[in-house]
Amino acid sequence: MNQLRHLAIRTEEPEKLAAFYIEAFGFREVREGVVPAQVQESKSFHLTDGYFELAILANSPNQSPNGLYHFGIKVDDMDETVRRLESWQKRVMRRPADTSFAELRVSDIDGNLMDLSVHGFLEYQPVKSGNEGK
Image (cartoon, rainbow, N blue to C red; front, side):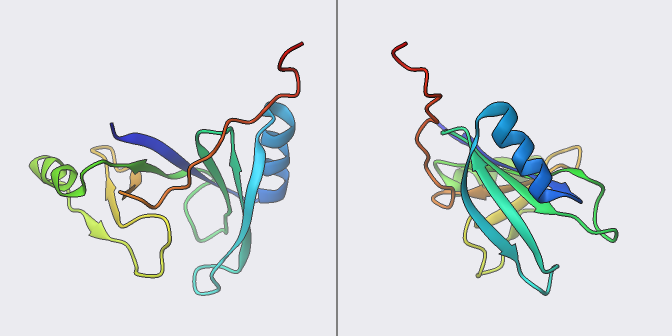
């Protein structure tokens, strides 16, 4: 079954927003990254609840407003998925070769961006709350 695996949010305060999700919901940080200089030299934070990745990306005034940037779906069969998207008259774009998490990008009928991958999203283990067995 196809699975929603990734959500990216843009913010002007990525470190503060990451701390919010870690402290308020118990998410754990799985990696930090740096957005390439050709886009914008900035730090990103990647958090998980154990099943899903939340990427928190730095925003700048010349980019989209803060908030949802894109989400990622792990698909079982890329060819079949592309065929179904094209039946909706959606143009599927290949991601740059140096992108490590998704092969294709498309938008839904409202213009929300999504990345598609057969193998590009990380698999996580559930976050333990520390209260198990009590």
